[in-house]
Image 1 (tube, rainbow, N blue to C red):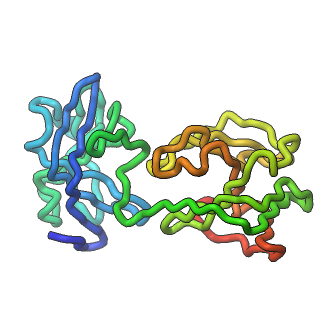
Image 2 (image 1 turned 135 degrees about the vertical axis):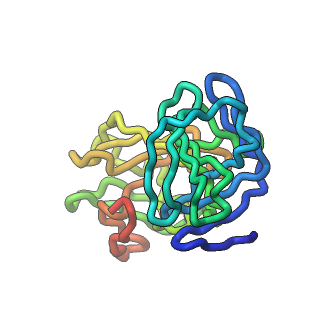
Length: 243
């Protein structure tokens, strides 16, 4: 089928083996998963019904309507109420014999033998971390909170470049840990700091996923919320989902 669109949806078959665990057991094992972009930012897996454990799905009698996918029949998945949708009569033929499982309602997802977090990985997204000797200076409310000539710059598809700085180049006395933790399917778990009284302006991946190991323990700041000077030039604050 290749990379195609049906109405407003992008569809793409995945060659990866996808497994889903629930209650300590694998309830899905497929090499025929379909990636469906319900939003422009990341895809969702639609699983062939034949690759789902027998008896796992039970209809609830509820429905959910989608302008592009049609009428979705809500199902429970094991003891997870309303955790699955089947578009049995979808105007998009490729969805009719598949189920969409709510990611967070499942215990674990694997692509091949690697656990994946938050959502399915977009095959068009790439993360690249490059060492640099560029001069990066970060200001918050006119106060320099970081100044480094040895950043690592992370380039991620569709997002602004992020400057990851050694802790020794950051004014740690101006940072206060917060309880915020976020997850990324490409980088892992991040912990956050408030900066000069502004909540969650900075973050770090203490133990990032393998493809992002080069940023381990470094600190980055939201370009969208602080003033960043690159080689002495003030950078325009980018527009992004984090603005």
